[in-house]
Image (cartoon, rainbow, N blue to C red; front, side, top):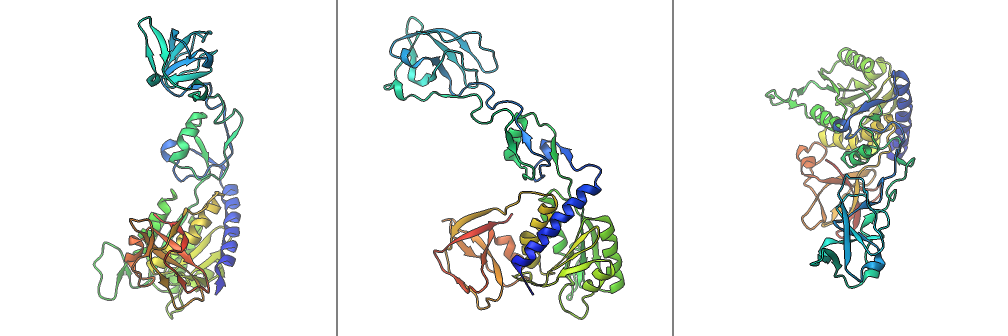
Length: 405
């Protein structure tokens, strides 16, 4: 059984190798996507701004453009400038210009006084009623204060989301260059496993992992090929694994990777041309995890229990997949405080504990009866890690919460 950090580094190294192969095998190292498809895609190249942002001194408040030194007297309003118009007027000494939010700041102006701090007298002049003109905010954004023309605004490997859309649009990127998605196949094994829509007999279970893995992959914009459930015999599994290998960059198998008499998966992997790099991981849940490689495809043999399968996907498979797309991935984490004690008796492995966030913001472990507990992850907001050798986490301890969705 190998230390998790050791196998993590090994797996990520293989993911980077697979990225280079996927890109070299593709007719193009990138593809283009629009705004409706950008969520979760990986940026394929550095992007630079084609102009300053803001591209001009931009008015931030409705009000009057003027000089600071003129605010001690009523000011004639020499014109107005609306957003989207080219100002044909400047602020001359002793005058002001009415301006709207988003407009170009007229030349000669030093600041905007907001309309709420002014009145217009009977002569049509603007009168400022503020108390301290020297401390007034300028109320406009200076040209280029956000981004300057030619500046790199997003780096290759960025994981795109809705928060990037406005920036991409502002630099004219209607079509965004992204890394091609890896091809992933899902394959389940087990004589006891049946389709979720079927009515199980007493000795059967519905296939929970294939839908779970499909959903997890869809969050990465990967639509997997599903090869169904394969019966527990060496020939059938070898044939299915070989087909999946030829059609994908990665195969995810669930079930059949423990030490039972009828677990043919390791032999089938080798018969299909895979070389097993590891088959036991010092993590709980998820100990019976296998990772194998071949010339054109990698393979994860995932535990059959749904919580183990979910955890291993989150902490190992997902980072691997992001590495195959050369992404700058960091799992989402927040710091939070334990609202209850947690203890365990066995400390030989690091362990991920599903927890929920209470209304007061503290964390409590969800009811968790082991890796076969289907209900546990559905009740959890995230997971916390208890290190190898540690037996407890006390109430009030600050911990890193790894968010899940």
